[in-house]
Length: 76
Ligand SMILES: [Zn+2]
Image (tube, rainbow, N blue to C red; front, side, top):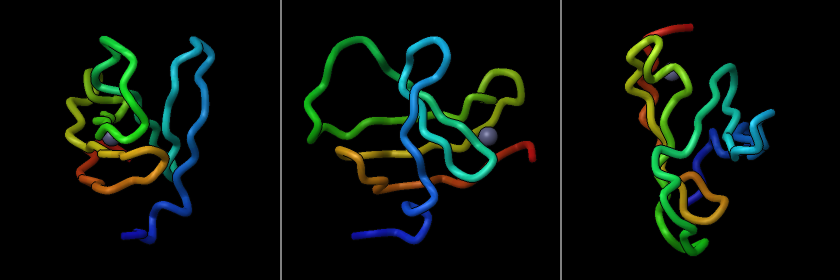
């Protein structure tokens, strides 16, 4: 299933060398980076404002596809 917002999502690397997803004005980082996971594994991303703004927005990806987007930002 290809969702409309996938076209706007950009996988990139932050200045710290961690992988992040840019989606519109928002950025997400991996919630769990404990170990290397296969590409086929579901990965859970959280908004970078999760701590500073208690943001609840999350993304789920499989490979480079976004399969779920919980668009509940507590900020602009
Ligand atoms: Zn957010």
